[in-house]
Length: 278
Ligand code: DGL
Figure 1 (spheres, rainbow, N blue to C red):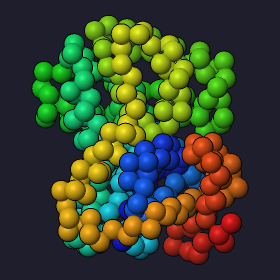
Figure 2: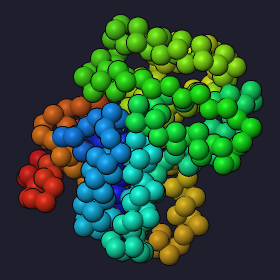
Figure 3: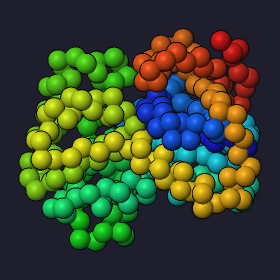
Figure 4: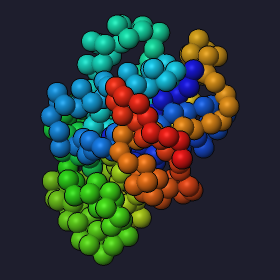
């Protein structure tokens, strides 16, 4: 079996990059639902339906272990899939999210007990980070803030623009106005690492800004170590296949920027045939 990595679009590549760096030996399949991204503003029902479709597709491609490398999908669809669908789809198969491992680490990092979260509107409205932190660290206050424009800045190639500075500063000011004691900010959206340098530059120096990739990679590593019944079935060819539900050329151009080297994806039509490998 291979390890499946799912995201609504490009952002999950920032997670896969760290996973691949930590565990280069495994075989991975990446699926980005670019044709229907962004998920961040969609309803619970829609995100559940889309994420389930992605999970079924990755299962059919021999990925018995799937990481939902999308905060919005993890927040809104993971639990329903685990509770309603996994039994039917194969009780030995696993779908994991990225919220729990990130809360475990972020909760350890704040000394002032005030944790800031930047995320999509969907993740913020789900209150998933608040719920998970409350279970592990009831003394910590979570201050979530949605940055609806940041994903669009990244998707449209404005990552390094001056316009991005304006919108980044605006959201940092808004978050810190809610709670000046914040000493740790978690970037809880897969796209935001692409804006990291600007976010870091506009955030007061005493506040730490945390990306998710390394945390998720470390957590997956620990999971495989603790589950030899899964690990021993993992293919170790060091390969990655990339699939997108959108036009491949567009995906390859943008994804290659995220990835740092050229990507050749295959287009995938749900319930239909795939485009040719490029
Ligand atoms: N992948 C999404 C997340 O991490 C961000 C992009 C989107 O809204 O689809 O929440």
